[in-house]
Length: 115
Image: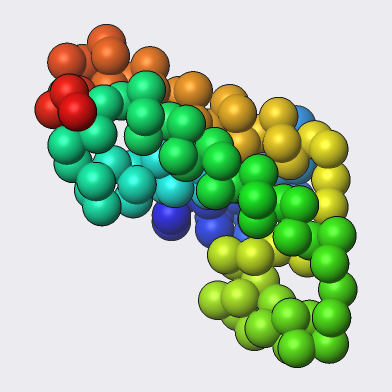
């Protein structure tokens, strides 16, 4: 989480590609780990599917702009969790972040218990 926030805050000092996309990929990686913590008996594959589904739903929800939801997004926490505007590139970042979590689990052997 701290790395994702730092990628936004210190973006001007980072390579443009990193500044533009690292925060979204790291957010999805955090979602992957949180889903894994919430459902520890799920397989890594199921955690990845759940995390990616959640991330995609959040991104699609950005197409919906009712006043009450804009007010939630206007808060710091709401903006960090729900985002502000739909971008196709965010979907690729989410896939990269979730894939990173999945690969790290598989390579390190720190996997979830099979369901």
